[in-house]
Length: 155
Image: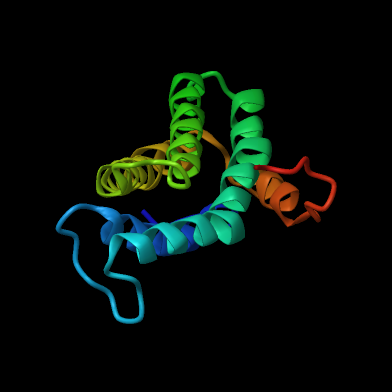
């Protein structure tokens, strides 16, 4: 199914996050110009989280998930699961600064991040596009197009 414009930026951001997930998984593939050692992966992951993933989670939670839950109760359970996974990922990423078992935490992040994104892309976004009308999806697109400068900070 073709992705609606309201969801396309999330899908594009998912691409980069999937690459991160792949390099973090134990025995994952190497990608050109991306770190291959655990210390490099730690630094890259923390930086990626601060510059991209935190904002991505924030936009999903404050705009997409809020819109979906307000308009329809059909996805409430799935939305709650996705928010819970965001929290787990944030906690794991914060653990990177203090963990003694870096390889294990990196692998957990990689596995969970990949599972999370695959679910959003293959199940959640598909359902959003099936449940909501074109007019409602256009309304979501308008909300996503508004400046996000007044959003609360994500740590």
